[in-house]
Length: 180
Image (cartoon, rainbow, N blue to C red; front, side):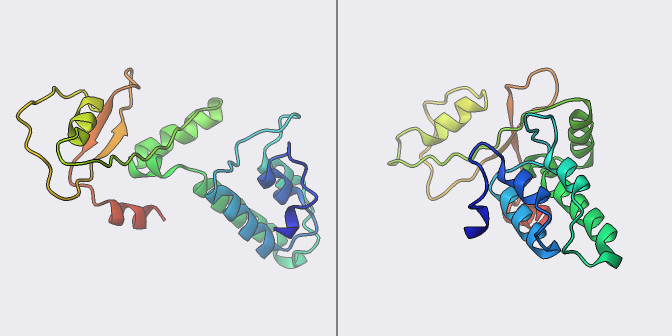
């Protein structure tokens, strides 16, 4: 992408994008959303301890229309904050979102997002592997799975962060639409 040619490799691209005063509001918005979609965070700090939103606050945004500049900057900042909440946190509901935001205010947190797909011949142990990850006992009489099975799990909240819990009756397509 031509717009990133001046971005040093050590500097996060979202930070670079939001501090660039020559971009229009639409360019800031599109590039920031694109960066967040591919993993950038508004909470990452550079060597001087500033986040991309700190640079955006300092940015005069000279190409924005002057009469709507403040409003556009506020709307974009709010949008970027919302987009930076991982879908796994959003899926857990308002209490998880509040806990996530509180944790960000009090320091830094790490959220790891993963998707696993087990492929293999019938009887190779795909379902048994998933059950083992969930801490369930091995069942040597487990019938072979016919077709495709989807298991949705979340890491538990509380003292035991290594425990995974299966979520029943979750329509992943509907959940994704709600999150987006």
